[in-house]
Amino acid sequence: MRRTIQIVAALALTAGSAPSAAQEPPGLRGGETLLEVEAEGVARAVPDVATFTVAVTTDGLAPPAALSANAERTTRLVQAARGAGIPDADLRTEELNVAPRYRERDGERTDEIIGYRATSRLRVRVSTVARASATLAALVAAGATEVDGPTFTFADPARQTRDARRQAMVEARAQAADYAAALGKRIARVLRVSERRRQSGEGAEIVVTGYRNKAPSLVPIVPGEQDTRVTVWVDYALAD
Image (cartoon, rainbow, N blue to C red; front, side, top):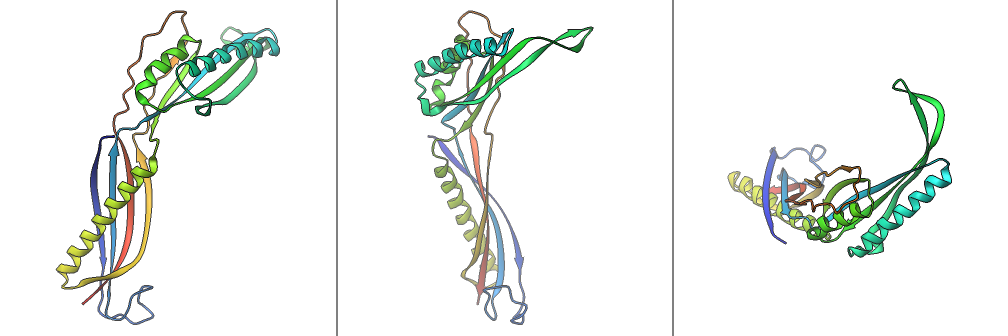
């Protein structure tokens, strides 16, 4: 997996000369200075997992008929996903709905029921992005009437978080050392560390509606790079 690291940092300094014990921040000792550091580490990598949601919609004069037709079409979707190498653990039914269809007159819906519509949605997780296009084509060929996605993620997101966290802490320490040197002090110890995490660029969107009975073309699916960001706040005690 190709990765690059980018760092952005911002700092704030709170200094004072020997405040009274009642005024000192928790953990500070007499004669020490508090340095509050905010630093951000960014781990950038190409995602290796793509997730789609596919749906089939069927109509019937009565709920059982609509649901039966939907079950048949959904079964074909599941079989197509398995045939594309998707394990059952990466397939999940996310919605099953049966609702009345009403007659419209002069552009407005009436209360007259003319049938029922069943919709089911299947979540498909493709563990290798390179297989996403072929998997999508197989699902559409099997009768999917809607496709939403993809959402891109990492198989091992903890690795990205560790990289970003490590870089953020390195940058925080380097900035603290700069401030300490400028003040003629040294870093005595760390008083407190907290963090916030977020990811950007998780997904693109491909929406397909309708279906024609012919083999679909492969749609290029390109994940690009995704950032995992960790912001840390570190309080240092500076001493002479």
